[in-house]
Length: 447
Ligand code: GDP
Ligand code: MG
Image 1 (spheres, rainbow, N blue to C red):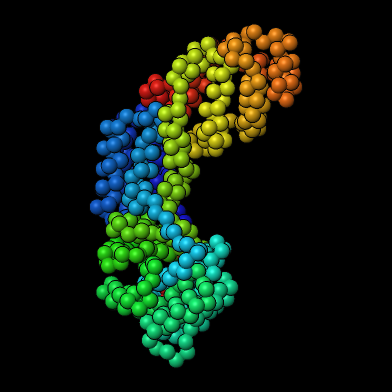
Image 2 (cartoon, protein in one colour):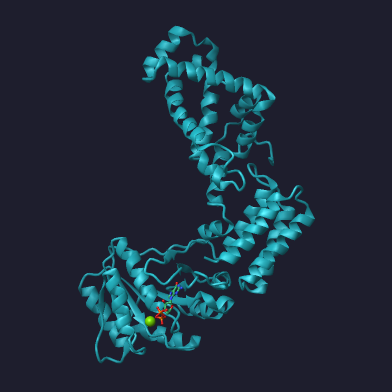
C-alpha cells in the first residue's frame, strides 16, 4: 500500500541516518527528499511546504530529548509532523449493547457497497448483529451486488422490490432491523451525485428520516488531493460524520487523499485496501505513519522512554555507572530493561539498532531477570547493600528462601561481580549508553 510514498520517505530517512554529520546542509537535503516524496504522492503543495518547513525548523532548533540521538530525533519530528498531517488518532466507538445506524454516502463508484460488506464483516467478527439496507434504487443490479457481498459475509439484507424512493427504504429497513434486534444497521445508498451539493442534500434527507448515529462518507483514494473539497463540505455539514478512504492499494495518490482529508479536520475511521471483504483497516494515523516510515511503533518507544525518565533514581544510575552498584542497583538495571518490555522489541523500534543483538541472548537475559529478582528479594537489606558478605551459609539460606538452587544464587553473584567490574572498566560504555538512552542518568542529549 502506498509503495512509492513509503519508498520515498524511507529512502530519505535512510540517507539521513547514513549521514556522518547532521548539519544544516544535511537537514535541508533531507527536507528536499521529503518534499519530492510527498509531492509525488499528490499531497497538496501547500501542505507539503507546511510539513517540511515544520520539520526543518524543529530539526534545526530543537534539542534531542534524553534517550534519543540527533538523527533519531529528526525522524521522530518527521513522524510527529506526518501524524499531524494525517489528523492524528481518532477511533470510532460503536456499542454492541446499542442499536447503531450507519449511513454510507459517496459518489457512485467510490466503494460504498464494497465498504458495506467490509464493515459488516469487521463488526460481525467483533460480535455485532449486523443488518444491511439496500437503499440504492438508482443503479441497476445494485441490490443484487449488495446481496452477493452480504452473502459472502453472512449478514441479512433488507430490500424492497419496486420501491423507488431510497429514503423510504432506508427508513423501513432501519425500523425492520431495529425490531429484529440488530446492534448495527448499515444503509447503502445510491450516491449518484457528481458534486458535493447533491450528496449533502441526500444526506440531509436521509438524516431527517433515519437519524443515523454515524454518516460515513466514502472517498475514492485514487482522486488524490481532490478529496479535499468533498471531505471539507461533508465535515462542515455533518456533525456525526466520518470518512472511509478506499482503494489505497496501489493508489499512487493515496497519500494525497489522506492528507487532504486530514487537512479538513474530518475523521478518517477506515481505509479500504483491496476489493475483498477483508481488505479494510481501522485507520490510526500514528500506526499508519509508523508503517510508512518503516520503524514499528516509534511513538510507543518514546512514551516508554519518557515514562522511564520520570521513574529513574538518579543516585542508583550514578552508582551503576561508576561501578559501585549494590544488588538492588543490579536488579534495578535489569528492571529498566524489563519495564520497557521485551528488549528485542525495543531494539526493533530503534531505526538501525535491530539485529545488533541475538534473539537467544535476549531471551536468556529476560529469563535470568525473573530468577535473579526472586533471589535478590530473598536477601536481607544488609546483603543487598554489601553483596561481598554473601558466604556459603548465606547462599544456602537465600536459595531455600527464594525456591531457587544454590547454583542459581552463585551465578547471580558471579554476574553481579562481572557487571560491577564491567561498569568500572571502559567496557561499561555500552550499558551506560543504553541506560542514558532509556532516559536514565540525566546527562542530557546522548549519542
Ligand atoms: P459504490 O458505487 O460506491 O457502491 O462502489 P462499489 O462498492 O460498487 O465499488 C466500485 C468499484 O471499486 C468496485 O469494482 C470495487 O471492487 C472497487 N473497490 C471498492 N473498494 C476498493 C478498494 O479498497 N480497493 C480496490 N482496489 N478496489 C475497490
Ligand atoms: Mg453501490
